[in-house]
Length: 116
Image 1 (cartoon, one colour):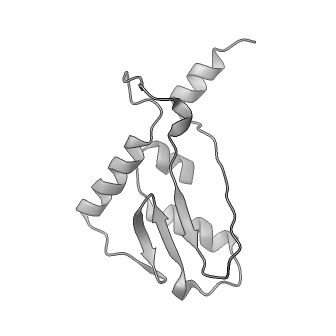
Image 2: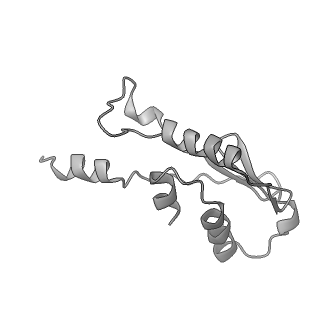
C-alpha cells in the first residue's frame, strides 16, 4: 500500500504509520519521528498538523522523484531518483536501510517488453 501511495503521488500518512504499527513492536511511539524527503509527517510521536499546503509540498516531492511522468522523459540518470522515507525510532545508533523497487505501470510496461 505504501508503494501505491508513492506511485500515485499521494502522501498518505496513514499507510506509512499503519505499516509501522503493524511491524514494529516494543517502541516508545511518543518519541518517533517520520519524514518523507525533508518533510516531517510525524514529530515526537504526533502526526503533524496536516493541511492542503503540506500535502501539496509532499505530493510535489513525490512527483519530482518519479522516473517518468507521462510522456516526459528525464534528462538525468534514472537511478538518481528515489523517495526517501526516514523513520527515527530514537533507539540508539543502529540504522537500517530498506530499498524498494519501482513497480509503476511505466516500469512494468517498459521492462515487460524487454527481451534478453
